[in-house]
Amino acid sequence: MKTLFSFLLLGFSGLSMQLYQQKPLEQSIADGEEIYTDFCLQCHMANGKGVPGSFPPLANSDYLNDIDQSIHAIKFGLKGPITVNGKSYNSNMISQGLDDEEIADVMNYILRSWGNESSTIVTEEKVASIQK
Image 1 (tube, helix red, strand yellow):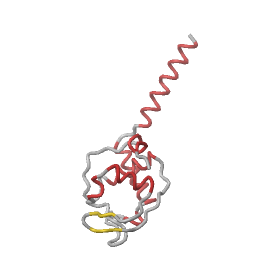
Image 2 (spheres, helix red, strand yellow; image 1 turned 120 degrees about the horizontal axis):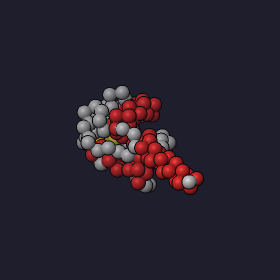
Image 3 (spheres, helix red, strand yellow; image 1 turned 180 degrees about the vertical axis):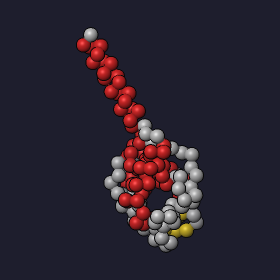
Image 4 (tube, rainbow, N blue to C red; image 1 turned 180 degrees about the horizontal axis):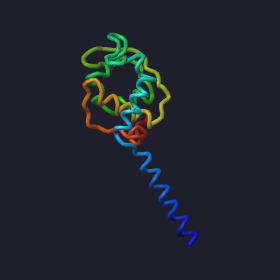
């Protein structure tokens, strides 16, 4: 009986942890907005338009079409020339030290803000799969 109770307790604990880790998209977006405000807004601005010639826009950004590349930039930073919406940028973006869940949240927020209309849902597992 004790073994059965322990087994059931472990099973319910595992299930509740799995459900906890898979937060609803709306919560991920809300969390992502807070993360954006704390870590990204300084360069990419509140309107997502960036700073011409210095920091690329996230608003209506074709760079976001490559989800893996976008996650990689947030996760590991970005150095060297890139082209966004036909314009060249050559700034450094250092990694902000966000964990995989925070990166997933901020990506879900960015992908649905300032004219971006992605149906992609970025998960913590997706972010974890992106390697240097």
